[in-house]
Amino acid sequence: MYLLRRLGFYALAAFVAVSVNFFLPRLAPGDPASTMFANYSTQLTPAALDGLREAYGLTDDPLVVQYGRYLWALLHGDLGVSLSQFPSPVTDVIATGLGWSILLGVVSVAASFVIGCALGAVAAWRRSGIVDRVAPPSLIFVGSFPYFFLALLLMYLLAFDWGVFPLGHAYDDGLEPALTLEFAGSVATHLALPVFTIVLVSVGSWTLNMRNAMVGVLSEDYLTLAEAKGLAPRHILLRHAVRNALLPNVTMLGMAVGMVFSGQILTEIVFSYPGLGFLLLQAVTTVDYPLMQALFLIITLSVLAANFIVDSLYALLDPRVRQVVAA
Image (spheres, rainbow, N blue to C red):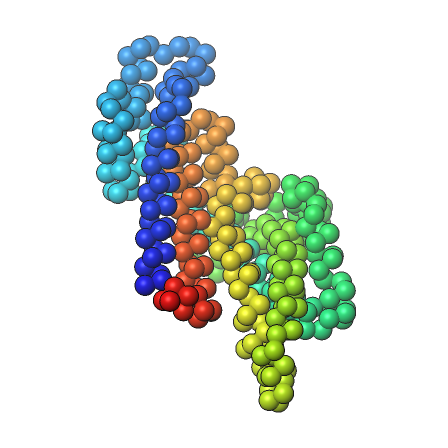
């Protein structure tokens, strides 16, 4: 029942997001065709402009009729035609970067979450130890640097100057995508530096939040009871303390996963990584309205999907959530 209620809420939120994504550009002054018309040094003829409007679905029909066609096309996976890569469909353009963004986002978020939670748990379990004194303040200090500056600095040192990592892109230029060890190794080496920069900037907040949550959990009476029963310290740490302290970080994990596509724009720009963030920059600079709309919609729906997954994990990790709803 709890999950069904949450699913209904997020379905309604997704419908609102889809509607806003349709109406907002159409209620603004002008349209994509007129914008392109203004950007051309040699003016288009009125007939050519009408052809552009028709190609982009900008007709004089009532908004309700256009909205119905938009929803019908969306249900069939038709997101329109890209202006910057005409006549390629938007879905084909997005497909070129979706996999790379998911790979970069999942690996970086998972690495930050695991490393941060592990360091935070150890820092709280061994308070005033070397990990507690060094890890949280050092990582927060590094994370306070502007990301663009830090990424450029690491790319200059590790890629350009020392040659430890490749300079950019997702794999070597001479390779063709294939299920081979050579291609997988090339992808991994090109992925390592972008992931390292994201982890370096974000792991401090995971560590500090986990440490603070663990400090509060360690003062609870049920842990004192577990120690009195003679349970092994490792069992108390993993089965009782860490499991309960993870709940705040699980919420952050959902937001981090949901912001994968929008939060990596700077990373993909700096390292010329061919993901959705790089495509969004191209769409904005070329005034590619259909591609921008599709990318904004993907970002919104990914945030909603991630939050629904977090709600499901919360119900699994904390039975009190289900009990409150049932009551």
